[in-house]
Length: 161
Image 1 (cartoon, rainbow, N blue to C red):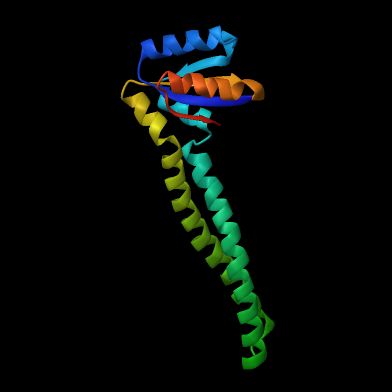
Image 2: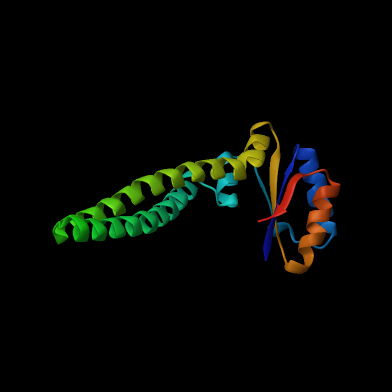
């Protein structure tokens, strides 16, 4: 099953589109209409905390990998060349991990915030302006036909989730 989403202008468009979808053989229980921002974001899978935290974790992981390698190399070089103890090398390594977490996590959170807003903008803004977001659960075979019907009904942002 695939979810097909689109933004319709008003209630009359929803009624007409729903009727055409039912005539095409889709059961009514597979057609959902949303007008509230939280429900739309949930359907899109882009709730703010989920998206931002996911990107922050990825960013921190990449930051740790990069910074830890440099810190390990720097710690080993400094210990060998300058005759520091192993504690200094270990401290440099931990400092690299901390720096990677902070820098990578911060950058990841910024990217996640932008991604969150980009994915949901059309549908959330459309609903705020009186539009309706329609989501249809369709089989793989019916997905293209559902998209075509929504596009013929002048739905905006028609895509498979």
